[in-house]
Image (tube, rainbow, N blue to C red; front, side, top):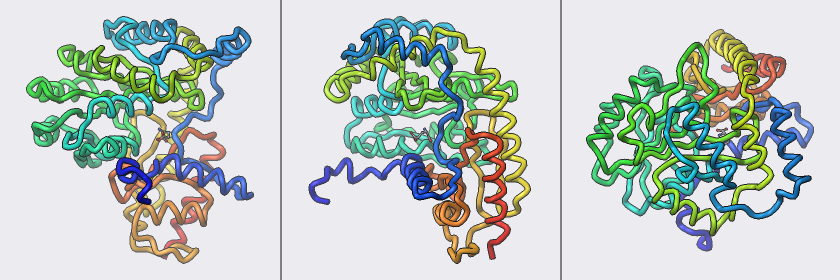
Length: 400
Ligand code: GLU
């Protein structure tokens, strides 16, 4: 263990990645496991995007690129921010990376020193605190429970800010809760941030297009333009275009920050995959009407999962307005014993017993900083979801 750096020792493995790998291994060992653990759409990458990737391969676009992305993709990213978010940015204010996670990692490594603090509401996406901790900085976790719709309020933000605060991380629609910050909520948070010019904003907008029930997407840099100079707006093609494996994220932010992130990419990944970058140009510039069908499908699945969960006495959940997760309480299972003899004392126990005894993989709330909960990703076919819900129901009904 001594050979491992302190930074890596401080990190926990990504629970979403680890549990999904566990599910893969159980499937490979012959178990009929249903994986609701990873956040990735089950749809195919749209055909015109796949075609652009194939054309890139056949056209020899298979060499190193600029560390922060090919000019064509940076332009497509700038156009997207102008078109969809009313953010007046140029291509040189944009960068491309190997997934949203790498962009966030770069931003944190580029700016954090020991003693710095980063504010995030819980439940949070699993990797935020570990990336911050890796940098030697302190994640300042503010509990945002179901009563506040799992959202950070202006008062909570004000109380959490200290002279050491470097960033606040906002994520809307949120992983794992599906919560959405509307314009009014962002404006209230923005007011607090305007009074604290030393705090930067990381707006993780990766679920931007997965928003339901007439809710409207909003992002801090366009709601409070005065914050644009200290906001990094992060997005990617993974969730909107079912391109998780292609690994392309992108961002816009202040040039000094992008330059530092560019340096890090040049010394680590060199560049994001050239083929994936060309496919992403087609994605961002192309027709997005297919998303209407995807959203309709996600809404049907969400409603079904919520309905089924609410019928299980031990569980409970809200109806999330975005992303493709349901973050459900499993408080009623605590202290009980499963049919397989597992004493369930935590949401992790619950999730592990569910995998071992019911062949359904989900992720425990503790990994997202809030217990006792578990996250279901409903980006799986309705048939499989239904079987998974049958199994969860049976598992809970057998608790003693
Ligand atoms: N963001 C997705 C999730 O939460 C993918 C895995 C990961 O990067 O955490 O499941």
